[in-house]
Length: 346
Length: 294
Image (cartoon, rainbow over all chains, first blue to last red):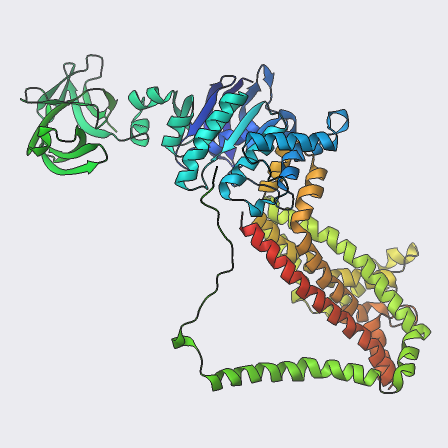
């Protein structure tokens, strides 16, 4: 099922949580809403679900306008951050709940509901736990029961709010892989909310980066990481350096020296240069480069991070070198950013 | 797949260091004070009630309970409780739902209002009904014209009892529902349940022990209420006398056995309530712990 969010605005007591957000989600896609807290990602998810109504704008499921439909009519599977399992019901009753509350001929007989519940428990690899109560399960198991319960109603769209937020790191990684497998097998259009960029980049087909109630960028993990389109995305995803520079005659100048980067289409004047620490080209001599004195050097996993002080302003930037690279031993290093972007000075 | 993060939710036992442990004599004194106090002010009166009730033998005791006025008082008390407790269950759940589950203007005001009967003397709440429904009262003329008798009749007694008992259920449920939040209800709705199914299958089971606890306290108060009921009842023997009022009348007539016999029933109710309350607290505590386990 395709989902289209068209110019949606949402206010809570006149305080805007989302400004004019539009998003197309393709059928069968696994998409992540990524952003810091307060970015509106959970609000967007709840709007798609029908747990909230938009102040303005529309939400389409396929060609159908779902904006004014209730959550029951939308037929979405929602997995809550804290799972919201019914604590007085067994695992099987939790999973079967959505079928049990149906009316008339669409309600399967009790035996069929039990069979469906067992089937779904197999799918989430919890066979044999039908009679347990939620309090008797671990966090990871509850998470999987919550997913099975959401899938029991054969939803058009699967929505997950911080699905791994309450779990510890190891279980998290395991469940991440497992969710991807389930998605590939069942093919549900799936949207999940996370504040963990690693999770979003690793798991999702496309990532929606959000900040302050707006969508900053939508793209694959590669798009988002390699070509961020705003200072926010540069700062929020991965590591980045920001240097105050000047554009003159189509060239970028740092203080009084050109750094060998051409920016023919950039407006003249002050600007900020963004680049990633690992995306640099080391140089020997320096005619048209950025040069700095080594202030600190740290070993981080497979690479060496070198902190440089640049120019009279003692601006600090960080670059990444291969371990054992001779430059790391020097007191002065010259480089030029490989991939970079200019934004108007803040 | 193994889950390494299984947690246990065993209660945390705090071990006290030797430095803050009182000396044995100090412990003994503290305990003696507590027990002596409870003995004199609670246990002794209870024993006296049963002792006085049975002073002239078991025959006189049962006689005092089966005489028509006593039976009428017991009957009326049960009737009043049977009406006011369900009313307060409905009110308590609605008020708790409104306060805990959504935002609206005047919420703080409603919360304060619910506590009003606790801060107002019951006699005054009775008096308010007299001023409202009495012959000279605000609605007195209108009621008389339509031949409706509220004061000095069962409706007045029920109204006064509902007034003094309405905080019990609501106050029990509000913190419970606030703690539980909206998550379970949203989950039920997202799975296609309608409002009624959500209430019946999800909300009610989540609050059942708290509700029962509130009902128990509400019932004990409804049967034992004296002040407010005394003002509106008119003390008509065999008609508008509840058990507490009947005890007073008998006692004023120097019928000690009769008074204490009826009083022993109320004391019995108190004891049963206490036992049930303790059992519920044990059960309810476990339930709350399970809630926190989520």
